[in-house]
Image (cartoon, rainbow, N blue to C red; front, side, top):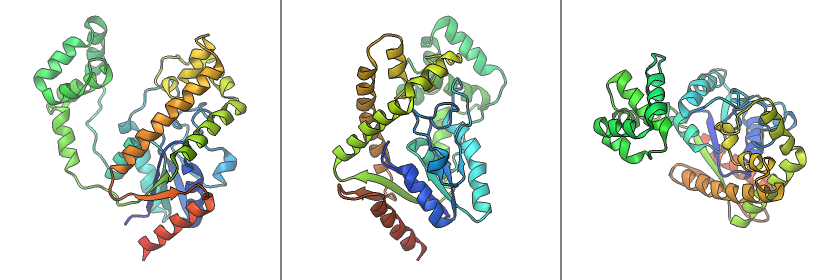
Length: 311
């Protein structure tokens, strides 16, 4: 098994704190695996760890993109893979922690993504979509890759264009590419940990408390500053849970209190999806927090699993 510990689990479950403690225990460095903490100036709403919370442990893959930029799993892996290799080459333990399971899985697998060249074809496809809409592009995709077309919705312009771009650049459909890469054995063999709760209400209470704390810490001011700096309200980053709801409130579409209630509800739904994703992997070791457990009990359980793996 590689010197890699993956920590997954739902939002507000304590992944960041556990990652820091395990890094201290195992002489490690933390590689964030969160699709929102990559953005600069989006700190409070993404629960990005503060300097104090990092406790001197190096953290990677934070603040690597601007909020107006689109990001993707392929870009994440392209940036995080060299960092992971560097941490391992120095004899350190890599603690890959975060709630974006898609990013984590592809990073561990070492997925080879279809090339993303700058030949102008993507721009041509985007221009055509602007002129004619996505229906003609979907019809074209259905002819060359009916499997991909069947799983994409007509509104998913970005992925429709991406599928056509891959075919035009490589001559291989994105379905064939994905099937070929899935057959490749995983590059890394990490110890996979996931945080869970015996009482789901305990998780929901933690989510509610986190949203309240974000507001106390100045989330509304953070969002105003982003908008005032010219960040488009419709960009991908600002559509995240915890941002889009308050953007709407700032436009007068409801109150801040109503927005906070919506963030709490949406975060609960997101937590359920995260738990479902983590359950897909049979190699995951679950750290289930009982109502009476604190961070010490979870850390002790994680230490036992690490020791068992080392023996």
